[in-house]
Image 1 (tube, rainbow, N blue to C red):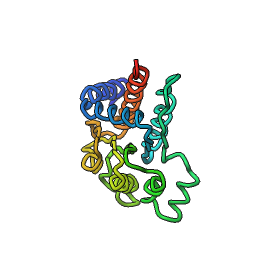
Image 2 (image 1 turned 60 degrees about the horizontal axis):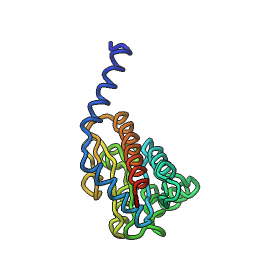
Image 3 (image 1 turned 90 degrees about the horizontal axis):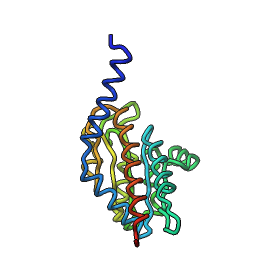
Image 4 (image 1 turned 90 degrees about the vertical axis):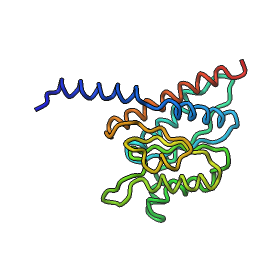
Length: 202
């Protein structure tokens, strides 16, 4: 039987290892894409399911607040996870696969950015069927509107790795580690954007 000390050490060692192995190039591309969206006053939409829904809300909060520099324009950000009355109405009337695409429908335009967060990237299935079909339907709508897409995934990347313009895949097959890394990634992205916005025009 593994004791707490051994488990904690292994867990944290794995966390450090996966953070060191994060792919740098898609991280850099994601920062560049979001910075251009800020420059062009485009809207950023963010969505996820389960724990990734809370990460989507967290990302939207940080992208709105942490990047706010006095005297500079602000990011325009909408977390598609945050309007629970609308979300539940769409589930009830249209079905769960529609909840994000329907919210994008009246707003998404060329040059906007859609960030989708999913541990498995849309791969796999559970009691309700295939996972994350609402994210993939939103991604398809985004593509039809020339909306740029960023995926945050884990495991083998799933459909997000294949379909998103940029996909940051956390290289480990562990839901807790992937979700923790996704929060670290959004913090990194927002902090770098804050730096670049503060330097813009200097």
